[in-house]
Image 1 (cartoon, rainbow, N blue to C red):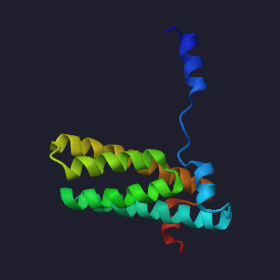
Image 2 (tube, helix red, strand yellow):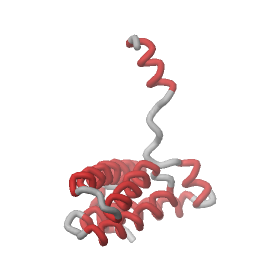
Image 3 (cartoon, rainbow, N blue to C red):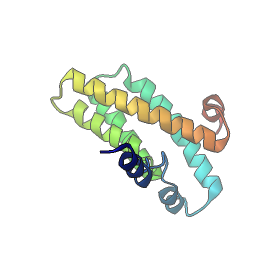
Length: 133
C-alpha cells in the first residue's frame, strides 16, 4: 500500500471519539447539565474501579469490569466498554494470567483516555472531578 493510499484510508476511517456524543445525548435526552453530571460520575467511577481491580482476585476483577462495562455502554464510551468486556471474559474464564494482565492493561489505557477526555470536556482536572458531587 502506498503512503498516499494509507493516508487516504486513515483519513476516511478516523478513530472514533472517546465518548459517543450522539449516544450520550440520547441517553440524557439532550440535557447538558445531566450529561456533565453523568460524565463526572463516570470519570470518578473509572478511577475507583481501576484502583480496585489492580489488586483484586479474578472473581472480583470480573465483577468490577462488568460494572464498568454497563456504565461505559450507558454513556457511549465504546473503547472502555470493549476493554471491560474483554477483562470480564478473561477473568471469568480459564484465561492465562498473561491474558488477564493484557486485558487489564487495555482497560487501564481506555479508562485513562476516557477520564482525560471527560476532564478536558468538563474543563476540570481529575482531582476536581473526583471532589465534585
